Image 1 (tube, rainbow, N blue to C red):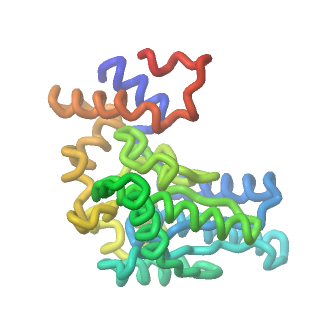
Image 2 (cartoon, helix red, strand yellow):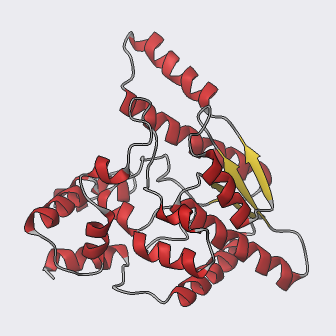
Length: 276
């Protein structure tokens, strides 16, 4: 393992192996403790039907269940939010995830009217058409805005789905799915997330499906691995300290450097991290 790989793994808090049961218990305990610390009423999470939101949502609901049982109350709640842009092509998976998680409440909010209005206003203001890729970012940010609206209304915190493979590559929308109050699956790689879902009894098809952000109208359901030019097995191997081809290693480390701004707060004149 080269020194750069070791430093990145340390920064992202990754481990070569995890004990599934221990990780589940540790993260549930963290969610309970932080909720009590903040005095909030629960958690909100956008649920897509993919691996990451299914895992984060299940951990949150288990934490809420334990907290309510320990306090002999029904004060705390987890709200799963469905945020389709029109009709979601894998809606059946989202419903299966909801059935698995059994959230206290489900709210469905169609983001299409807000996104289309924003894109239309951009065109009217600039005389230009927003590129499809950037419209995808509008979708991600509108979804996060909706989650924060719901969280503010009910006195809750917004959960995120950031994990080590996404953090490594910066594969998230800044101020979109990259924004949240709490990141319950941070530090896990993709195969470790699968491991936890297996322990939790999740239906196989939810964590074996090809991951996709599904943000681009012109490339619906574009697989993450195709967009990245890297496989999750390569990313997970890197995060676990294994050797990769020189080409794959360089691609990963280049992406990590180029996306450093996504893992930082706003840059000020006091910051030096961006100078390398």
